[in-house]
Length: 196
Image (cartoon, rainbow, N blue to C red; front, top):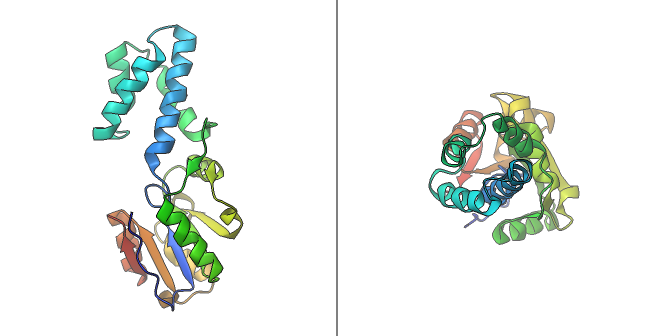
């Protein structure tokens, strides 16, 4: 993780959340851990550890793509449990707090000390993203964060944030990973740094 130096004229830095501030797999694999144990408790088979091992190996290559379908086919799991997995992704109470990337934590601390505003603009289900944020260890930085959800703001999310906070385009830097984020920044005339 190599964060860019922040130019002095930037008054606001906007971050995506997943794989930018923390590793998304830390959330996903904990949810799958809870799910495997839930199934083992209800059905007594398959053993939770076998399911967890399978998921961990598959996740390294495919992440979440088609995960439930593969797990269900491999272990003969009833497809009705897919809904339980979806609910867990939205609401799971994780066994362990999510930890920020070391570099992300250091950058956030530096920004707040220098009175640069920090916003999070995150995609995905707002309930699920909020669940991640509330279970992240922020080291007291959460009081300085302002959070926005792409799904609630729509296509012009960045434009809405700029207008709402009365910002000039040149004062804002957006740090993300996806081409979607890059395109959004480009449309708004905002500087963008990719962590890919």
